[in-house]
Amino acid sequence: MVLKQLQRMGAATIHTIAGLGRAGLMLLGAIIGKPSFRKGAPLLLKQLYVVGVLSLLIIVVSGLFIGMVLALQGYTVLVKFGAEQMLGPLVALSLLRELGPVVTALLFAGRAGSALTAEIGLMKATEQLSSMEMMAVDPLRRIIAPRFWAGVISMPLLAIIFTAVGILGGHLVGVDWLGVDAGGYWSAMQANVDLYQDVFNGIIKSIVFAFIVMWIALHKGFDAIPTSEGISRATTETVVTASLAVLAFDFILTALMFGG
Amino acid sequence: MGIVPALLNSRFICNMENTLSDFIVDIQNMSFSRGDNLIYDRMNMTVAQGKVTAIMGPSGIGKTTLLKLIGGQLKPDSGDILFRGRSIPKMNRSELYQTRKDMSMLFQSGALFSEMSVFDNVAFPIREHTKLPESLIKIMVLMKLEAVGLRGARDLMPAELSGGMARRAALARAIALDPQLIMYDEPFAGQDPISMGIVVKLIRALNNALGLTSVVVSHDVTEVMSIADYVYVVAEKHVIGEGTPEQLRQHESPLVQQFLKGEADGAVPFHYKAAPYADELMELL
Ligand SMILES: Nc1ncnc2c1ncn2[C@@H]1O[C@H](COP(=O)(O)OP(=O)(O)OP(=O)(O)O)[C@@H](O)[C@H]1O
Ligand SMILES: [Mg+2]
Image 1: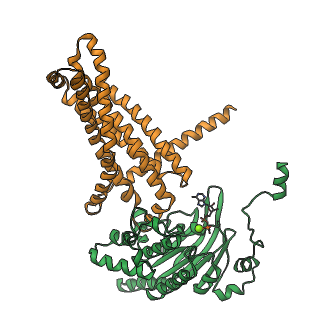
Image 2: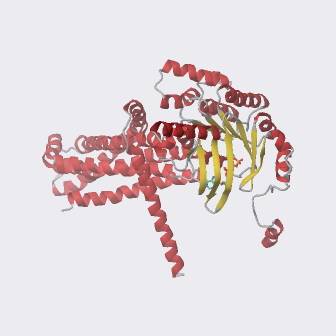
Image 3: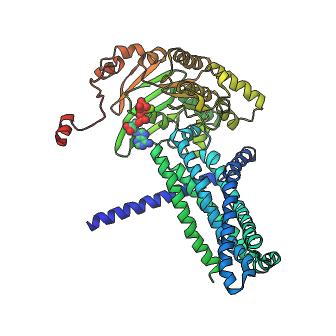
């Protein structure tokens, strides 16, 4: 009994480590080596559009609503203490430090990550990756690398857009609707937001999340069992694993950046 | 011995090697398994330069696997696979990629890139491996598409093609860079009699006109016997019969005869290995 359990645990551990190893090799194969600008640039541009630009709508709408909700919730608490002029910093800091990077990463995993996993899994299942390899074109460089970099570049930008739109949403609710003083909203924000501590750290978080989400999404697709069931499972796994990983890393990064 | 005779000597040995190995592919004592499933057990096979070599065998015997082994996508457990005298399994990545530029494979499913048009699919290998101007690429692509009868379909996406058309488009892509060795995995499957005839003629014509070497994997006995110079019948983890089509027709092995004549259940079992049918049914009762 115990032996069997141990055996199963061992097998699971080996399986996990082997998976991590394959994921690492995939990433190394994709991003190491001299990039060819002539071939790489158009591919990257196309992926920036697919991965980044097409995610804009969901990011902008979500950012707007989150900012509005933050202002509404924040106001009801702050007004009790007569501190409603602190609404600006509240909205801005929550978005810059936490919600901007984290919610963007979660939305991105659901919108772009799952699509990438499915796309690459399907390419594998229909032997497109194999046939590319037989044409002496490395699919890691041709397919994986441009998608990876497109995600890593576009996610921090999306997080910045999310945050900016969120702050505007907060303004909409706090100033235009609830009647907080507009000058106070902005000046308190300026006084309390630190460029390095808040803005930079938020962007660093976002870059880390981008690495995690893209790596997981691409690896799950590349490693998918090449059947329709395997691909659908890989897609689900991408969203679940990437979301959990983002939240876990958010805690670690927050502890490192703001914890002491 | 002076340096000149030594050089001559080495030249001579090189030449010897070249003349001795008329085989572009030489599989020696190769074993391969997928997990516990042994697929090839010390198999030997050669593919002669400039000839059409066919590989026939029952479904699921590992024909596609064999082509992937030759292409270096899979590594044998033991034994060796030589391509122009050089060991494929022992090559490092860049050597392997360099070697693959000289070979080409038509996949069973076609494997066209789904996000590109037919034209771009055929142009893909040319654009990747040459720096030719777009006008020249266009001419090359249209020539290849004309050869497979799909010049008019150049702007269609792969999803808009029928199975047979997709395979012909993939054939055009496979010959885009005039490789030395082309491996066709089931080129005849899904073709109507007319396009089947075209594909048969095309394989033969390409082979003769461009001096290619072709490996054709297929179940279609009639077509294979009509174009192949040399045929291998694979079953039971190795080659069970080989020879020119005439020699094979006279082959004494009952397995080979069964396969050529298409008898349902003879020496080669039709069923995947399983427990006896009656036993299994009894257990369920
Ligand atoms: N990716 C894989 N993982 C594990 N086993 C596999 C895999 N691909 C194929 N096999 C097994 O290898 C064996 C040979 O498969 P292969 O595709 O080479 O057969 P085939 O001769 O090409 O068949 P067909 O004529 O039907 O195309 C089969 O028994 C199959 O179950
Ligand atoms: Mg096959």
